Length: 236
Image (cartoon, rainbow, N blue to C red; front, side, top):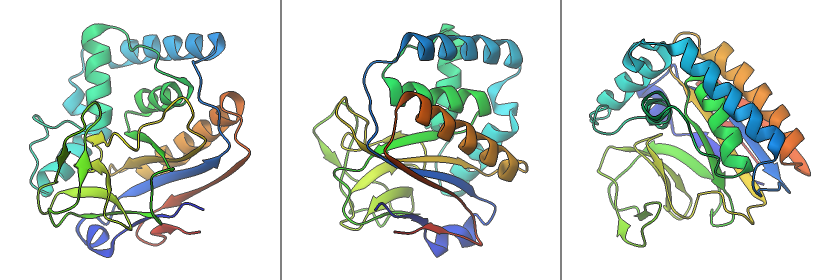
């Protein structure tokens, strides 16, 4: 069973972090159904209307993530959180494409709550995944690239027990190996926030995503948890 947790140094530096986690086994990840595609398009329209002309940096969820990025030495206008990058694409281009069932579900919840949602394929994960500060020697391969790179020391990463990085700059970008594929069957999903209303927003987002996964991805088993400084790990 997958394990996911926050290192104590992360919790000391960012004590208000709230993480919703889902571990699902036996999921199906083909092209999105017509019903899901319609729901995703409707959500995009609703989000565009709700945001209107509001600058994304003024949304409380994204403003909080910008502050976190700055706190570990990353310029949030150069490296945007996954949620901000997704909403920026939506508001500038007017539409997000359908990728697959799992990715569309994650993106639907991400734009609804303006929170980063990551779907991490578990086949290449050794042991569990820990959110911690990088020492700089951990290997990383970006999506669409076969080149091995390394995070900056002090950068926040998702890393497994063999020090393979599955996400850099906390919620900036996933690795090639962690991306959901057509044959993905076991996933770990994270929804994270730092803003004042994060406990309530993460709870709602986690419940809604769990329901959507059950409807569209048909997992055989699912377990979920909300993590924070008091409960920092989803164990085995």
